[in-house]
Length: 264
Image (cartoon, rainbow, N blue to C red):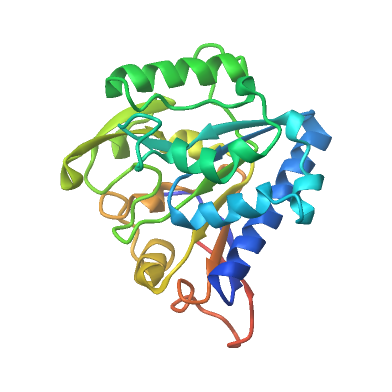
């Protein structure tokens, strides 16, 4: 049986307010990690939902920019498409255009997945980079200070898709995962690594995700079909940041209530 986890879900009325809530969560989590450990290691996801959050973080007119200790922040990726960094589908490119190119991060603070390489080579190189960055030995697992995840309508997260080999991977930090339903390969952190994140949050937007949110967090446990159900952090807590449309099938005691909790 999977471990029991306390889920806190924070609902924003609009996508714009969701981006602001996510930016606040990112900023406060990074600042707290730096205060305790002297640095913050964050793994981010691609897609349109985090893009708006990145733009807020990079905006010097917003309070987030001044509150983030940029010189103490290390950026990693949760997953990547097997494309060059200049490709429109690259998670790195989106993050670079929305965030990295606008903030004072040194190249040594940015750990890109090399999607242009052979997938197995790229996965091995990224695992080696993580091991070096975290100074890991043997079978040790990295503990990211923050892991930001998305959720697909099919119940996938990271690049761990339904009925793919990454669901059964227990020993690696990073794997190349063939996704037959998309006829492509992806590079992804494995779910046991995601489990070890000190803070793990899903950032979810849109009515198209509402059924998946319900199925993953309230439905029957079936990670082969809904791989996001594998994410049960060792910390015992998980955060969902959603807009109202994505949260419409979650239980709330009142229509106006914007914070809820549940055990999964």
